Structure formats: structure tokens, C-alpha cells
Image (cartoon, rainbow, N blue to C red; front, side):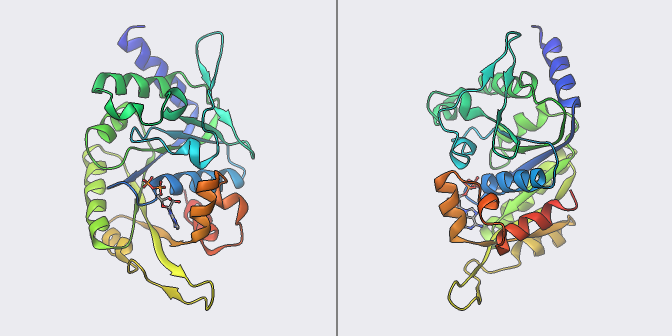
Length: 263
Ligand code: ADP
């Protein structure tokens, strides 16, 4: 199909989604994918119809986080793809489902990346959704820029950071990135913010605390909340069991629920 037909299809497809929320981070490893998965599930636990789309070219991690490695989306007779539905009804689509090896997309050139993103946005039958949470590539370079340009009318971005300075400085770049693209910043999430000692319940500020909040204030964007470091998050991630499903009564799960409440 011609470029404009394709764009038309993409736009039409996305019109059935009430809210499109981008999850960004200034750099890798701050827990962006973990936050994206748990926010999406928190919304779905509230009874919302939710899709989760992973467009992180640098080793898409959503299939691993949800134990969906090696799965392939079903292709319909009219050439569209069906997202994979998980327990609880959330629909999931990942660049990783289209790759033979998770690391393959890292070496793709621009046009191939654009083609893949267009396919993920235009050819996936999400149906009617209340929210589509999109796990972005990290940083503020070409990749997130390409993806952002292909998503018309995003509701806004959640920017994930850790509390220490090296990371919060990257946040200000993400905020600038959003402003340049006219994407509203929904707010900043400070992840890995303090560790609750399992023995004495005192909070140990491994990476300090409050850096994300300070940065949000300085950049004049909302602060959405802090998620503590919790070893159970690593365990669940590695086991492919969404944390918030299995550890509902933790401080971190409560934090995820508080963050989605106003979204
Ligand atoms: P990113 O998407 O930013 O690269 P990931 O979501 O893959 O980061 O997280 C990186 C690692 O940190 C993973 O092993 C994940 O389980 C762990 N992690 C993320 N957030 C937390 C947290 N709040 N507490 C403990 N571990 C976390």
C-alpha cells in the first residue's frame, strides 16, 4: 500500500484507543519496562481495557517479563495480527514477537525500523481499548524520535528515572524531548527509590531519595510517585510473573496503583 494509505490505516486503528501513554526514560536500566508492565496491569486490574506495546529495539524485554518468549502473534486472513492476551485480559504486542532473536533489531537501519513500527501500530487488531501503554526505546535519540513521530495524538508520557543525579539529568532531556514534540508530560516516576529492609522495615536510601521529585519540580512537570527497590520485583521479572499480580500487598504494588489512579 502507498505511504498515505498506510498512514490512514494506522490513524484509523489508533482512533479506537482512548488513551495512548508513552513510557520513556533518559537511559536504559532504570526500570522503564518494569514500570510499563506494572502500570499497564494496574490499569487492567482497575477494570480498564488495556494494551501493552513494546517497541524497544534494544532487546525488547516485555516477552521475557510476561513469560511470552517465542510466542508469535496470530495472523488473520486479512493480514492483520492479533495481540496476545494474558491472564486478566490485557493484550500484549512486542517487537520481540516479530524477531527470530531478541537482539536482531538492534542492527536495523532507519527505514526497517519505521516499517516495523508502522506495522505494530497499523496492523495489530487491538480492538477498542481504554489505554495503550507503549514501552519506548530508551534515551532521546533517533529511535524514540522515530517512534514518537509515528504516534499521532499521544495523551502523554510517563518518564521513569532512578533517584540519583546521573539519571535525573537524563530525565530533563526526556522532558525536553517531549516538549519539542508537543507530547504532554504526565509526570515523573522515581523508581528504585529506597529499599525497605526486610528485617527492620527501615528504608535504606541506596540511590538517595527524592531526586526524581526535585527534577520534576525544577522542570515544572508533575511528580507521579516513587517505587521502592524490592528484590521481589527482580524475582518476578526473571520468572516472567508480573510483580503486581503476585505481590498485591506490597509497598511497591501500592505505589503502582497510586500512580495509575489519576491517569
Ligand atoms: P529498562 O527497561 O529501563 O532497561 P528494566 O525494566 O528492564 O529496565 O529493569 C532493569 C532491571 O531492574 C530488571 O532486572 C528489573 O527486574 C529490575 N528492577 C526494575 N525496577 C525495580 C525495582 N523497583 N526494584 C527492584 N528491581 C527493579
